[in-house]
Image (tube, rainbow, N blue to C red; front, side, top):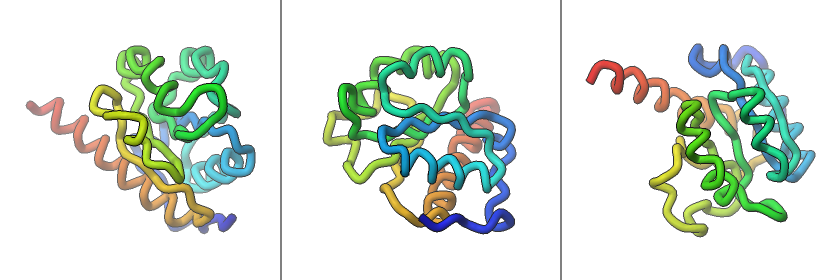
Length: 147
């Protein structure tokens, strides 16, 4: 997997000071996503698989969870639904990262989803899409405080 140059992505101020939790059942993707985000200046915590995530969420209180959709035992969408009340109360946003469209599991309107990024081996592309979603969230928070 390609690792983007450190200088191209500085990380947005909103997320750089906050934790990003990456949850995936594939160690290769988990390692790659973590490395890409760290290279862009984000603080990253990882968890392998969906089982046992709740204590990590409570302990780490991430700003954003990057979540694989297809995992054994519990899909990313099912995990998001189980923890959605907690994630909303902590103000956690979800970015689905998958080769599968998460809406195949049903509507996502009840979840704090920032968006979906298709699985890729291109770190530069991943970071561009991730930062676009984070920037949109940051702008939405700013506008909600004005209204």
